[in-house]
Image 1 (tube, rainbow, N blue to C red):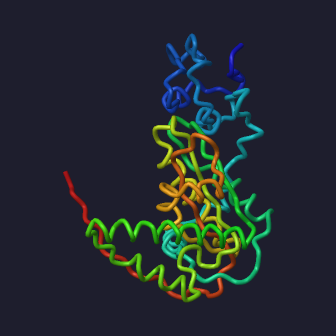
Image 2 (image 1 turned 30 degrees about the vertical axis):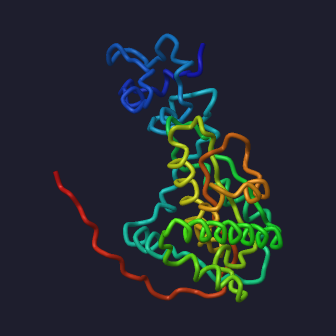
Image 3 (image 1 turned 60 degrees about the vertical axis):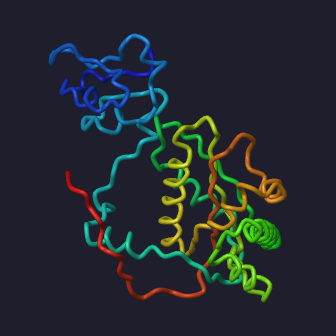
Length: 275
């Protein structure tokens, strides 16, 4: 029988599912025929759920992405253009956090929502490593600073100019954490080396996570300095403990913001090359 079943009492034979299938494994010889899967289609199916989601008649059934797992879109929850624009524009990088731990349930919720981000070929290979012990997050910052000190020594010998690293180290020595910002939690999204779109996939997942964080009362900040240190620092890689063979990664700080923002900052106008 394969992965799919078509309810012939509901199907209008409009071919929408055939046109929408990303893997092009559905066929419909003519408007009198029910859609069907091509020979070997089971092996090529991306299990993306497009076929089930796009059918306006509820006639399409897929055993690996069932209608029960694909709830209908609720019209009263659809946001309008102005709401969407403010929501996206109000995203901020949070660098001052309350001294309050982030509950495991909150992190679990954010990651659950982030799994709906698109991934190349619907591979869904992004994994998450969570550090919710504040002292451990502090150790991550310290090891990142250690890497930075060694980097500065090498750069000095080679005559390289590093404009802001010395300021970061000096601030850290003065008790100001500009690495993990005293965040109570650090979440690292990662993907295996074999995933050709791994860095894009995890970046999209992190974007979904941070957009969901705001409505939950949480704030986030991309930990770029930790990311740079992870490439070269063996002690830091060992402490963070990413899954083996995961060469794509990016950490993000999470916590409860100390301050609220009341306005929407402006950004430069986009440079567009029309062709």
